[in-house]
Image (tube, rainbow, N blue to C red; front, side, top):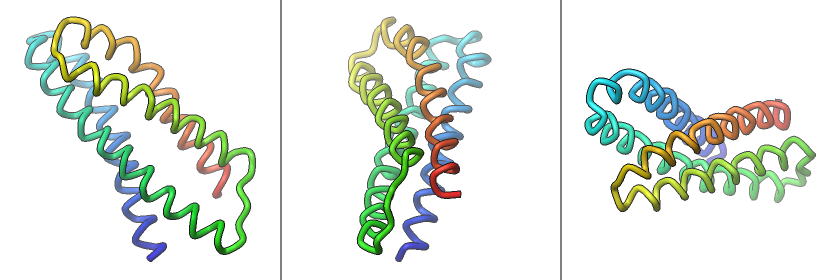
Length: 133
């Protein structure tokens, strides 16, 4: 069961990070040629990324619960990873809720939150590696 949780966790991580990169590429290319189309594509990619974050939380909580039950303790890097994941989740949730009502503010919010989400996701990965090896 733990192996399956880890596989799903890593696949969700791949979807999330890949979606972030894909969104940046869309913003740098397609959105310049056709802003409306680029915005719609980026929004769909971001929704897949948000679902990936929800899967990451579900599998991460399940893995942590099992590890704790087995007597594992969590050090500083684990909690820094959780903090980065909370920042990322908060930014993504803010964007997803705001994107329910389309308008020019959505693109501005995406430009504002993108560096924060990129930084938070990068730190979450770095801290996860430091926490778990």
